[in-house]
Image (cartoon, rainbow, N blue to C red; front, side, top):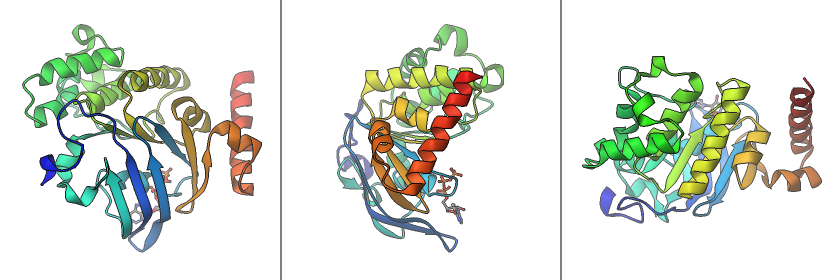
Length: 263
Ligand SMILES: Nc1ncnc2c1ncn2[C@@H]1O[C@H](COP(=O)(O)OP(=O)(O)OP(=O)(O)O)[C@@H](O)[C@H]1O
């Protein structure tokens, strides 16, 4: 099983599709995801937005089997994720958690080499160096630094490098820049956008920031109480919000952006 199934084989992976079909997740008696269908075509980026507790992280984690749905099906590259063993699946999917999740006692280079090393790739260090270059961190200058010797934005860039070093077909990012100040955040967003253009990796992004979603993603999915409220581009949603909730979310986000611009 695992390595022999589906289209996740063989580095570098081509971009593959993500597909959730009528997924429901009940966690500790709470219905976190309540019948969501979501497809992300190969190479596209979709952002999940919505208030805290809407089910965004739970849905994202279904794709790398960190959460098991109670009902429905989750497919990566056309294959149900339950057909992969979880460690194999996770090594083939890039994942950037909110606080990066870097190993504190490992250098930036060793952190970036983690997945290629787990895959026993002989070129793990070279892949990690290339990944650091891709996120704008010269390996000779930053590779030997430990996470505490980097800024928050640099740490998240190392986390991004680690996620893409094995050239996965899929990238899952959960509030990757949520803890950064405005300047580091916009730098990291620009790096991420360039990286996506370079790699063409299928991406699912969770963010609270509608403008970040608009900048990085091809489409935005607004979630509320475990369900999809609306899917579309920011422009299309502004032109025709599907519900009063989407209208008020847009109004708040755009008012916040105006305040920041005028500050
Ligand atoms: N392990 C768990 N046990 C019980 N309830 C959980 C668990 N994980 C999440 N939940 C609940 O499921 C719901 C959805 O949580 P989730 O983290 O997916 O939302 P979210 O939209 O990502 O929120 P945030 O933006 O705050 O991260 C929430 O009500 C949350 O409290």
